[in-house]
Image: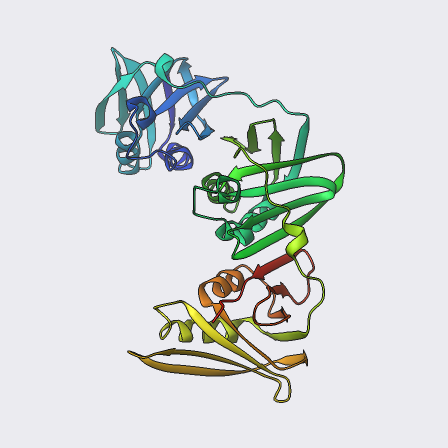
Length: 365
């Protein structure tokens, strides 16, 4: 193999695929990247046996071939090369890398040793705007469980059917759902993608424009965006029927500005480090929210916020982390908080949109 490409393009390609490689791999080949010239492009692949990423880098191909090299070594080297053309050439179990006055040899392993990256064939293909998908991911992923003993909720649900897609995450203490309207889909399917896959997808999409194609098979998913493909296993299991726990009738509704509410929660956090709790008082007569946090060791904080309140006065205790996560993913200036009582789930939604719902359970005192 012999190819010539720019340092900028090669650096970007390596950054796309390199992050999924773990430093604790037991199989040495999983520390390597597969580098292959094909159809006038340099294809770079990585895998951790759960996720595989392949991206293409524009280059001049003088001789086809394939080889694997240690990811960290290649990434560290290329990141420190000058922003000039780089030549990559295989010779005697080594990869020769040259750029201006830089001449480097990296030990290699045969391409045949690299795990086979599967092709995903499925009956259901989705085409989504890349930024719409990224927003959906960013608005829900943090609500997924980190407890691997419940694998079905440690991932993110993609529920396809009717007029769109529902992207959902929950850890049983909170739940986030984002709806995307699509062209009518005749086939219904649910797939649970690992949270790590979802986070990588958001990172890879970044600011890229264009459409994303998603293909689902029985146990795998493939996501294609421009020059990059991500293939991931699906989480085995049945996602809980979460829609039955989302309440539809509420006693009290609060409309308030997002930014002051987030600031008040961060202030409360200073005094609620032990249990992450903040007391929320809803005062309809004063049209006011009062957020209070108290620590016997540190002191007490109380913040009063103006709000438009309809319904009854109420009081409940919430995890401030959960609320801040939600507020950080809502773009609206105002949010609506819908409350039943101090032992039932509350909803937080944007004021101007109906495509996002965040449910949070209160802390029982």
